[in-house]
Length: 475
Image 1 (cartoon, rainbow, N blue to C red):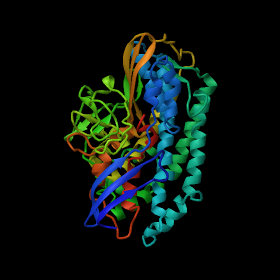
Image 2 (image 1 turned 90 degrees about the vertical axis):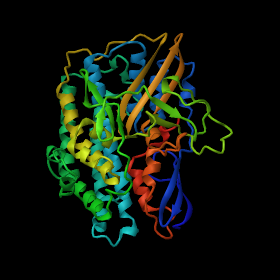
Image 3 (image 1 turned 135 degrees about the horizontal axis):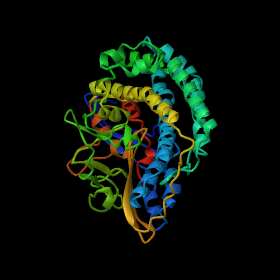
Image 4 (image 1 turned 45 degrees about the vertical axis):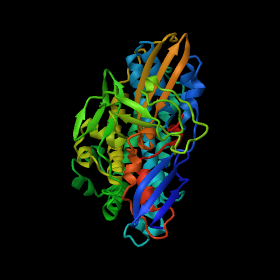
């Protein structure tokens, strides 16, 4: 079908439920509507509970990025009580969080994104045989080694977070377990082994060499490791122009430590970086099955429209900043942090988003190693925070997929309001009252659809380039 309408979904290899409604014209997508069909209700569950319950419940929003939710909840409660965590506890929380995000990037590349290039539709491409060998589901060599490397890296979470997912280790006052000298040695050994895997398999060379690439042309010239196979595919299929974004990016800043962030917070629009300012943030409800006015999350409500009015088409709200949709994720973080390669890729499509994730994978290794080397076993890792009786706060973190925010209001020792805006809420949002599409909806316009396709490969590549986590989208 190259004319008319097409519904694509449900998607496999996506956390949660997703439908994409496409209007087709002249063999391409003319208009897209993205539906998040699963309403969760976590924000309603939290109403009236003790504030500390947020530390238990919000990580259960997702089994992939539960530490991101835990860190955001801990920061929101600390902010509401005017409390600062122990510095070494904050650094350990950053390391725990980085391990989860890196693990997500690794699985996205190997298990979620690259297997699409093993499809028979690409059998005539010169790289197809290598893609089949490396990335076929369950049998690909790259997938087996990625699973082993990820499991070994996540020993750090078993050691310091107690368990994964749904740890309670991260608290408003720091972390619940203080590492000893032997723990520090074990963490550094795990990171050394992970570096060896990345340099031997994913990049085929020193991470610092890949992180030093500064232009799109230099990136496409990288000829080692599994990254080079992706780059060959990207050049052959012109994934640079497929699914291009508007070039507006948002990052809350990743891995705060000693008053700074490993990856800086900020906003990128009109080709320039600006400080992070959320005063003009609103959640538009015009095309969501939600009731109430457009509001800042600090003042927002979650009132599901059980009648599902006809002019709406998703349970997802539409976050906007200063009236504009914003794209978030690894590419956004690296653009805002000022990396020259990311800025050369800004506004790009599938290539840019996946390359941004690979770039961050390489750069995050150095961040984790630095955090581990700075562990001081003699320092306190927890400064216990009292239960908040009255106050309001926000917790801003960077999950693997982008900007995650928790906003809480506490009255008389109970949660009076809790609002969560996840990365996929930003990226997969519906239209707003001005008719502006969300980032994925806009990126899908122009995607080619071949005659007879019911699940267009171009659409799948674009959707997966955003790495959706749909269970995080609607709460």
